[in-house]
Amino acid sequence: MKTLADFKASLNSNQPDSSLSVQLKSLWYDGKGDWQKAHAQVDHLSDRSSAWVHAYLHRKEGDVWNADYWYRQARQTRPDISLDEEWEQLVVEFL
Image (tube, rainbow, N blue to C red; front, side, top):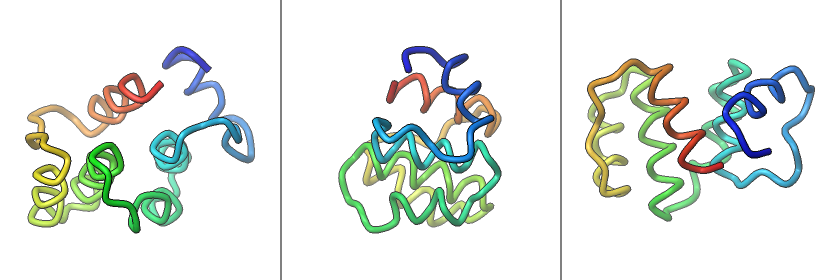
């Protein structure tokens, strides 16, 4: 999978591609509307990439304080863009 379009097309599948990174699996589940499974992919991880996805998920949840904590762990700043735009930005970053 090399493009955002490919990734979005994969959302028609029942399971994420086994070759996806944990960050992309998390974003895949989020793209399918399953926040809990998305969160479970990265909740126990502390690397910066996972923290960035984790931050996005808490921002989506509406827990800004927790999101900001994870953005700091990822050495990122909470973006001033829509959640859909951030999701796409993250997918492209990790593809």
